[in-house]
Image (cartoon, rainbow, N blue to C red; front, side, top):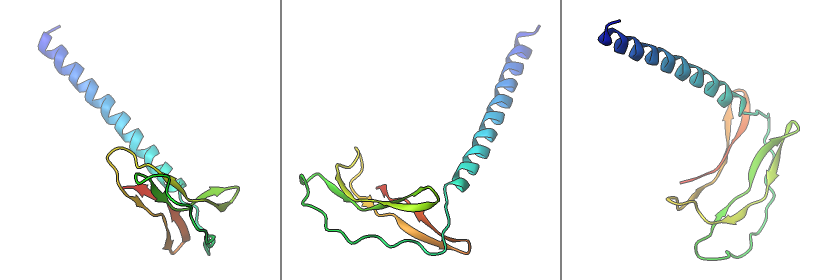
Length: 110
């Protein structure tokens, strides 16, 4: 077998394998993203809570979040946290309204 032919064949097979794996990852990634939204007609209201004093000047308040549990949104209380390396601020989560209803968009570090 010609060495050049073997190299081209190997590269081609690697490209085909990569394309197949990449396509599968996109397909499953897209399905997962759709499954993460749980729509409700009216979102629950957050409890009004005072948060304690910060444990240190390095801590940032992470407000309450909502998670889907047993067919409904459940509030998890806010807490103080030290930002991960390279991040300084917590971006609060929020409710997003669509024609299908409302769903929670989780907060994240910025």
